[in-house]
Length: 110
Length: 113
Figure: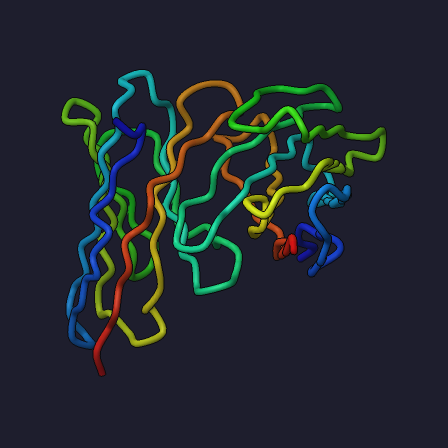
């Protein structure tokens, strides 16, 4: 079992809709959680991080963390075609070691 | 704002050759990470350094070594290159006293022929 699991998609949503991306992790000791956006051939770009249970909002993005259920999600409101990318969930389990999920491919249809 | 710098951006090597990748972290960042990303795969953690000391080790092959220097830049040395080493190599940096959010460099695309 991988430390971090994501639905690889592809996920397609119409422009203006809400895109919901999910991630589960296996280690209950995981400390902090990150969402990255990666365009093909480019480096991952940090979108949000969260380390406390609940919701964290930043503009059109909301990260949700539920440590009891060991999942973290990312909601993208008012999705735009420029949001089309692969979204990577990353988890810091301990120290300076991080695990990434395989990513969810999102396509926003104009 | 200054970002993570990686060099070279592209590198072509032959099997059994050696390669050295360089990473310059964001100023004042004290932690550096190296990742390998194959086509269609997630970034695989290789190794990290905090304050010039190795911090954590991931799936780094024994043929690879890395270090962080006094100016905090880091180098990943890869020897006896194999075809399977062809990948994007990312360096990321962070502040240890933060929550660990990492900022990635543009990557080095290594092609082994």
